[in-house]
Length: 597
Picture 1 (cartoon, one colour):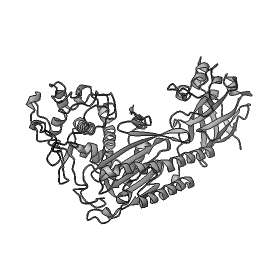
Picture 2 (cartoon, one colour):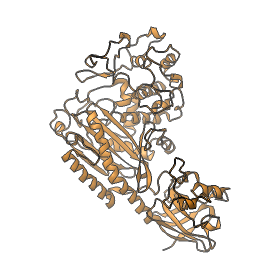
Picture 3 (cartoon, one colour):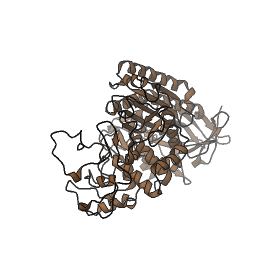
Picture 4 (cartoon, rainbow, N blue to C red):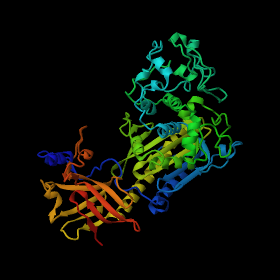
């Protein structure tokens, strides 16, 4: 039964495959196909890729046009930093200071890797990271009403005359962290009813429904909601307990969707998440952030609120109009943090390495929560996940963008390569004009650097593992090669004088053969490297409809065992002085094959 299922999952439909168009293109399981590349700062191919990116960026700064679009590039101060989880510091950095910052009376006049920018919504990522550091994800399925009792009261109150309000008892902490709560996007920040903003054609609204906080005033300053104080009763909704100013407004907002139905971007979700964490820990968010993020990671230019000094600050215009001085109150958890290129690299590497969180927690966190309507995008907590193809395989990029005032930012992590980068920008053109720039620059990096990273990983894997391996006392051997398809290919596999795949009933059926490749599984220690094999019977049919099963390899792993061990399990022993394999053990066969000179 297992052999039949193995063949079916690999795309061989007996009796029909001959009538279909076929392919020999392999489909690896999702994840790394080679061990992550190392030594990138001195690798010629990586350096060549960054030079290509540099040249493209130079042209873009001169012309205002990138390969994917135009924008105010040369009117934007920017700092770009790339990092590898296995190397100290940055492996690439580039900075450009536009005239508005170069001639500014405030802060630095020359951007570098220690220059401080507002992060905008990257703050959401750091709030979730802080929550996981302090509490883990065990509370993610708890209802928010367990930790904010005012919302429990709202859940049982009469409905709002303006629409159906959220069922707060159904909304979980995890849904707040992943844009799956269905609650309103903002309270205040996109409001049209306050003085100086209301268009003349809009009718007056009842005084008790006016927004009182969380908005930018006409002079550019920000009026925050007070996280405490200014309590009052909302008797018309039946409350007897006093509520904080922000919650008083949030509970009146109609829901957008049922919780768990579809992703819908929500700043409110992270403001509430910050309040949840404060209530759980009985501590202030700023104190928690300083203790568990700034101090734990030894950060020097990162803070929850505006830094006490303008040294290193990137400030176009002035401290008010740029948004630099805005203390966002409860909104800090969703958009208030500040950081630098060096500190963003430190945080990115800690996330990739599982330095502060456990590696198991990190693996759970860096996964999608749901799809979006774009087949190449997903969302996490609160990752914005972009999917691309590199050398014929899928690469997932875990990102979070941000913007506030004159600032637009992005952090990108690529777990398949233990690589990441940040782009921090500031411009008098404002967030709306510069937010597209961080994506245009990200596209330039992805198109030049990701293929190089894949090639470096392949080169290093080939140097370490490729070769012929044989037993000293049996007629058993195999060959490991790296070709133009993903993963290390196993060929000429002989066990006790017989061709292995034929011996177990695979391949050579109507002209088919088994393409068997190894992918790293990160299960072993430094002197051993573990791989899991992925086999596909070739050629495989090409399907054009929605039920395309010729890339169903995740469902075919470990379908044949011997002595309760899958034939896909391989372990290489590594010489620590050379970094190269000395032998390989196909674990199911209980044998060690020595690498031949």
